[in-house]
Length: 432
Image 1 (cartoon, one colour):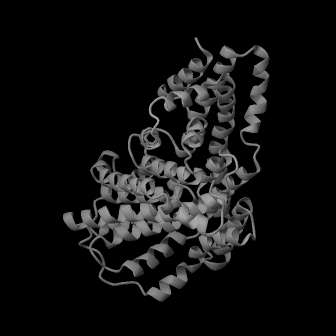
Image 2 (cartoon, rainbow, N blue to C red):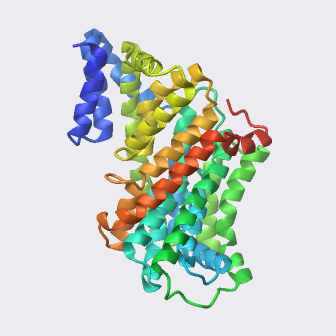
Image 3 (spheres, rainbow, N blue to C red):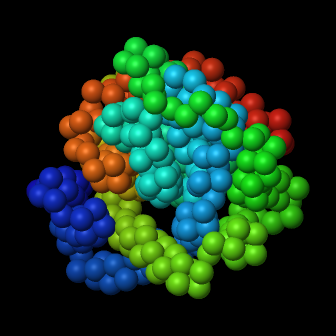
């Protein structure tokens, strides 16, 4: 059997068999090396495993994960709910819109969709149930809204993308994700309002409106987190990796001294949980290093790219095909794994058709965002369904509307690249 085929077939078989993604990547790489190279090449396994994570920018990942954990336990979510409720006011579907806004704000702190979904669902689903929203609808709204965390900086997935694409400025990616992130949030709000009006959801919402100034001041420390991160990057006060350190320190300051809701037990739990989450991410990346080295050495990625070149000479047609493949991949794989597996194939396509790497990275992130709330895997939906004590099946009839709306948002970014590129270009970042 050809070594490239052995590599890809082994990976596919292990994945279908339910083997964890990290193990599948590592074993497939080993099989490819044993099939196509001499036994001495096995000595590169340890080096390539190490090289997969021996990158300074990756320090930002565990730190931003920790930032999200700290803000989750600091009571920030409830303060943001009060502020968003004051902005939206009592109206049909208002509480659902509040959930969307809070998810977007939390995404600017955690950089992780599942963490965002867990924090907001815990606060919002009980309140929405009392106001007359079905739990399946509430779980679907929050899962879809939390997917914007992959776009709104700081995004862990965009950090991985910036590392894998040579010469790309992470600041440009962060800035590029802002407008599409807002567009993705709007694409969830519109069907949310329509469905709420059509089915009469939220008829038991409280008529009183929280005081705007008071709720704003209470939420201000949390609202300042993304401002500090992006402002520091813009002014050059710190690098993206240093921004993660600043974010952790600021989160601790807010939790311990401002809200005074963070105990030392909470800090220990946040450290332990973030270490566990970060370890999973970095193990995947380390074993993906074996897969990537084997695939490039054996020519598997070049062959795959040539196959895709043969599908069409029209860049738009190929782009749409790539988007469909990424959408399907997002239904069964997590975002970081998708980047690690597909980018070696997609980078030659970017070069061939002249796609802007910042724009294309945002398109990938938007596709992966849809996958986070689209069954069968749907990591965000699993979290919100568990918190809401409802089955995944009960959310499907609602989620399909959000999938369609966000797909339309992707279409807009494809048709008008300036949605993603205007802000980074305005700020003077190199977008590729």
